[in-house]
Length: 257
Image 1 (tube, rainbow, N blue to C red):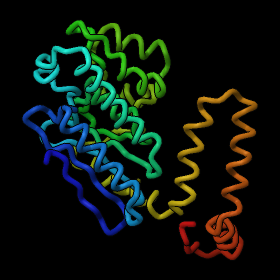
Image 2: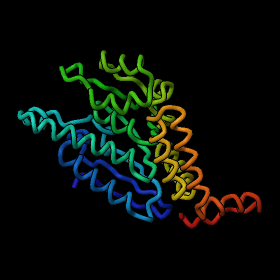
Image 3: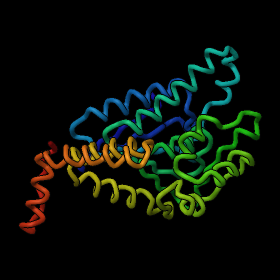
Image 4: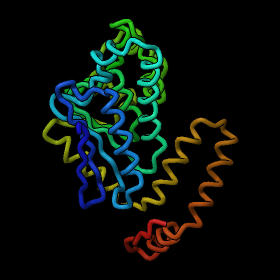
C-alpha cells in the first residue's frame, strides 16, 4: 500500500503518500486508498487533526501521466477525474481539519490537493503549478480548488502560462499559510496541528462545515445559516464548559459534545 498512516498520541494523524517512484502521483490506486484512509480517520474518535505529506523528493506531481495515456476510453478518463474530485470533496466536507505539509513540487492535481486542505505549509523551496496547458491538457479540475483560494487574475496566470510559483509568492496570494526551512517544517506543522487538536473537536467539526457552506451562500442567507449554527453550537456542552472556564480563569475540559 502506497498510503501510510501514523497516529500520534496528541490526536494528530499523519497520512503519507509513499509512492516516490511516480512522484507521489494521484493514480487510480492512490486516490482510492486516500479516500478510504480519509474516511476512516474522519470516523476515528482519537484523530482530531490530519496532516498529509509526500515521501521522497516532493509532495505530488498530480496524475500519473503514463497511466492517463493508457486509459484511452472516455469513461476511463471520466472515472479518474470523478475519483479525484471525490477525494477533494472528502477533505473539504470531512469533519477533521486537514493540513498539507508540502516539500518539493505540488503540481496539477497535487496543487489541487494542497488547495483543498484547510491549511497548508511548505518548505522554502517548494513549487506550486497548474502546468496542464504545457501538455495540451488544461488544469480544469485543479482550478476548482485553487481558484477558491486565490484571486482570478493570479489563477488565470498560473493556468495560462503553466509556470510554477515559489513558496513566498504562494503565501502572498493565499495558496499556503506559511513556509519554513526544511529543518523546521515538520516541527512547525506539528506545533500548529497540536494546537488545533487541543480545542474541542466537536466545535471544530461544526465550524469547519459551517465555514465552507456559508462561502457558497449570498450574504443574507449566510448570516441566517451561521446564526442557526452558532445557536446549535451554543447549546453544546463544550460551549458551556468553554465559557465557564474562561470566566473562572481555568483551562477547559472538553467533552467533545
